[in-house]
Image (cartoon, rainbow, N blue to C red; front, side, top):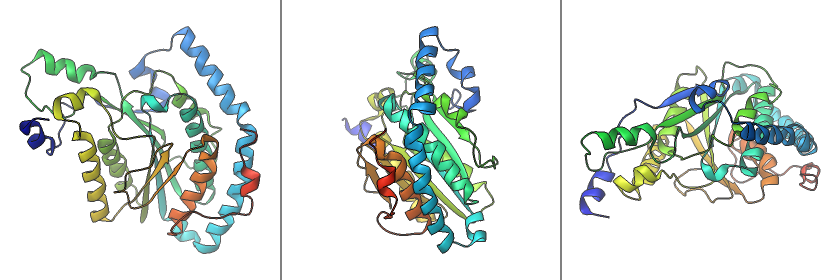
Length: 309
């Protein structure tokens, strides 16, 4: 990496935000376009697996969730629970496609029901980019004068699956069907996604705010990294996390999916076996809510095993 790149990479910026989008999951067609017939068949198959194939897995999670709910209720007063909001921010990069996304969607559905049943506010968000190889941002940069070290050079796509204003305990999981679209996962620009999720949390009138980032790897966007240096996105991610830690109004944690999370997160956990994702997420949420170090042992853990997943 040249000295010029190294010098400028520490100053994070976006070349343009004109093409960035924040959409409700139900409006993804407006960004991604309608699915092809083949892609629709694949989505239908994934949805059937989520609704039917994973039903025994989800049932066992609900059993474990009841025990964890009792534990939380015994240690957190109702007004404390009702004064808390949790945001689950899912990485929706290309490497998450397939089984990782399937189990993430199923776990998000179970987790939102778990939190809502406790009276805890919940947001479920996703982050990716609208296109590969830079999208319209890169094309604009190429068509005009090309400044060196242009900054982030892709179009952000941030997706709202569950807004905190949704007070339903169960949504039937239908909104997570959109998470299974094969054309959704692309690049992941974690730092700006965390800033976005944090800004949403700050607008929610609840006293305690927790942000959990669920990811399977480091931030990657080839268009951006090729023009700004290989550490540009990772350095920004670390700076964003450090800022949140110093401001201390939001508790941030990271949950790795087949990936050991960066050490700069104050609380981390990771799973290697996808069938463990749901149970480990519920235990991780419980530990964060109760401000406990380590994982939470539960007597019904054996009932939430993976033999039927």
